[in-house]
Image (cartoon, rainbow, N blue to C red):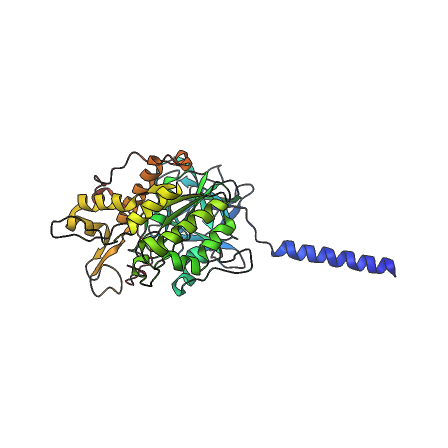
Length: 442
């Protein structure tokens, strides 16, 4: 009887372990795009590989590239996926940081590839190959979920429930004229994470023509650093705390990680007796700093981006009151790094001028986007060009402050906000989704 019970218990335990193993999400993938035989160790992905939760990978959002085969002995590079329109490829993955390695190129024609991840995070920009040339590029993507390790979860806004940043998969968007031969995905735990806490000027905006600097800066870092953007439109320091976003950040922060903190636009609208730049705003900024330090993190205070608020003299007027100065004072008092984005963007908007800055903000005539019956004229939120230039300000601030993460920067010559890049030099392949609805906050 004892032997039968032992055998039963043993097989039950084995079955439970097998079930647990089966339910674990796969986290390592090697995909070979094409119609022919897969290269050794790779999973073949042809044009009919449509994403489903059951399969766990595939082309997504009703996009379907063309599969081209050039033949030859190299199974990995002999065929590839391409399109003259953006296409998406998604992989079901749990929360974590992932190294993504892409092989790009075509044996017979030139290619040009821009890759965005999740909610339009710019990862690779204008990677060009000549006919017969192949390149391998690697970048790091952060995947996050709502769960906090104490059983609680982040309180999301309704608009966030459909954001690619908060779903249960990694989504890559391929633009221009790509030739995608292969993708490898591997989890990594050794990256320095830069957590972003902020509002609509920082968040990864899902839809054209809106954009923020937080979704542009991944493009300027090589592996070794990953950007985890926890910002959201309309938030102040208080609502970032109240929705448990700081708690979420701290739950996954490692010693040596960074926390960039940019608030002010929405904080200045709080009018309680204890609110104000030198009251609740200052107190909460200090709380963010102290909590990050307790985790061994490195806080960086970022002053708020200037609005497009020109005075009668044709120069930018401060529309943020005492909030930028209060942030400067907290950085000094707490002995933490400061990136004075307010001063830098003021210089940049002055250099562009009242008319020129319309090219950096969401200013578009009617019918520029589907469903847009009236002109868009937003003086707080940026378009991709404006967001890209502000990201360059952030990168210059990292260099000026001599932060440790500066050693991971790539393609970043010195940037002077008083001499921004001409808008004519900027090229952004637009994503398929657009909206005329202004992000929360102002």
